[in-house]
Structure formats: structure tokens, C-alpha cells
Image (cartoon, rainbow, N blue to C red):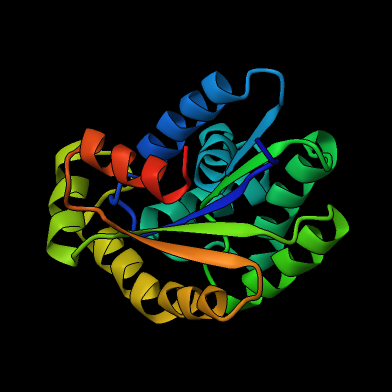
Length: 197
């Protein structure tokens, strides 16, 4: 198996975290000798917010509570540090939580070029707003307030959907549109088929 670069895109509540974990397991079983670097910026932001010791950590917590996008520089630092410390040209790379804007996608291009990763798969978990809204209410995470959910859905529509257009015209890139309303197992099977695993 060649080293895979897989970017997950979808609104909050579309199951990205669950599916990236399932894919991690599937790839590790199919290619047990190759390292998998799994970068989930949302998880990293929540870990920062949980500390609330520094000014920055408190600001991150406020951003999570309100549902606002975290600033680009922080997002770049978090995934940049993870790549620098873990990634090489022989690892699989799974990405969730960025890029969330076209600007972030352009910065990620620099990193993909640096790490010699031309071929990219984008998993688009296409899930209607009414479905993800219901899922977010049901999971009852502390930052899933009514206001923050609506804010996140709005910035997904306005800022993240254009990222899919960016990748649809990027060379050596396949965007796989996955039906996010399927069951967890069903979505996983769709992803495995899309990636020929």
C-alpha cells in the first residue's frame, strides 16, 4: 500500500471523529508496518481549552463555547507541530478539523509539498444540517449549545464548503462524496470502497 493522505471534511456532527478512528484501524490492519499520523485539530483545541491556565487557553475555551472559528495562526501551529514531530514521507496521514477555510487549505498545500505528498483523498461526509443539528443536541457536549451549533453550521456553509471546490480542481486529488446519513457501519463501508481498501 502506498502512503495515504486522507482529509476529512464535513459539518460538526457528521461523524468525522468516529470515521477517522474506524479508518485508522482499517489501515493499520491492512498495512501494519507503516505508521499512521492522525491529526484532529478539534481534539487538540478541546485539550487546550480544558487546561484554562494561560490567556490563550482561556481564549480557546471562549471560542469553543461560542462556536466561532479559532484563529488561523493557532490552527496552523497545532497541525504544524503535529506534522513536524510525527510525519515523514512514508507515513499514512489522516486529517480532521482542517482545512476549514480556503486560506487554511492554501497553507496546507505548503506542508503537503514539503512532506512530498502530491496525491490526496478528500472524504466529504455530506450530511444535511437537520441531521447534524439533531446529532449535536443528542451528544450533549459542553460546547454544543444552541447558539454555538448555529454559529458552527453557518461558518461551515460560508467558510468550509468552498474548500471542497478548492480540492475538486486540485491535481492528483479525489474528492469522495459520502452519504453521511447512512449508519456508522454504512459510512465506514462507503469510505473503504472509495479508498479501495
